[in-house]
Image 1: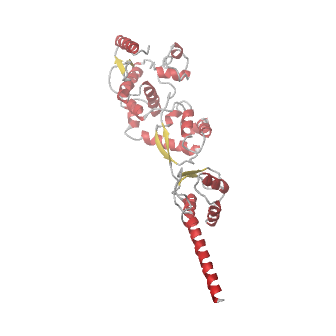
Image 2: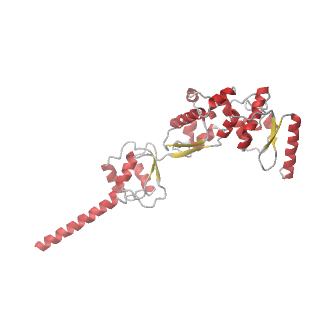
Image 3: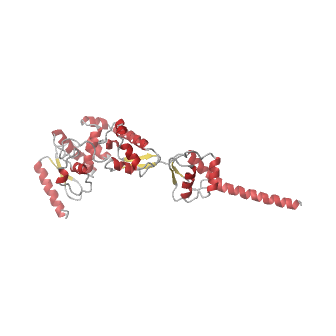
Length: 343
């Protein structure tokens, strides 16, 4: 009889130990696999607990849904709605560690990259690649005239809000928060390196500087000559000469795929066409790089009023003070293209 009791107690002890080991391995350790295809999980805004569980399961972050649900309920993780965001999950985490992190741990920011966008539609589409809101939600806000006027912009120079750079933001940022962040970055940019003072010295607003910089941006990819090109356009503005910038004629027609600027572009009636209208266009023709903005703010001092591409593989331009010199440069440009078999 005593032997039977001892055997029964021994079996019970083995069962308890085995159960304890199982609970420890599934709850306290090893809840998250050691190998994860993607260590970042995105929980959409407004998700239910069931939807979060499905996301975690589909991504292979949890393999025992029952244990996860039990632990999550015990830790009071389920709520309506669930906490949203992008979170980094560490391989080998216990279920408790996973739940604790999703419930109250820090979000993992994303790097939102804005460069070379032509119009606000392109900005919205680019931003939507990195954050939760879709491009339509972002664009809808950017096209809300009352909203953008309250920010101090209009539809023509709204593009000046965006300074190309890489920004760390939370994935679940709202469209309003995104725009507010861009406004903050815009103001910080202009308050650095005496940029506001330099714009004032030119007799220009930051929006006008940005607008001219967008033309410089589209004229050359070579930072080394941007200050010189900026000087050309500032000289033209000073003497009342039309800017006659090919990129503005292209923007006016929205013929962005064209390889050549033709008479159609040059005579297209639009306030953005600087062949047709004097002064700056109503707003930027593209997002301007920081290099182009600073080139306008720090222009090269010279007497050039003409420039054209050299036509070789350097991508640089030739500059002239007189029309006669400019015509010689144009002839060289055509000759270089013919020698390269491009004309």
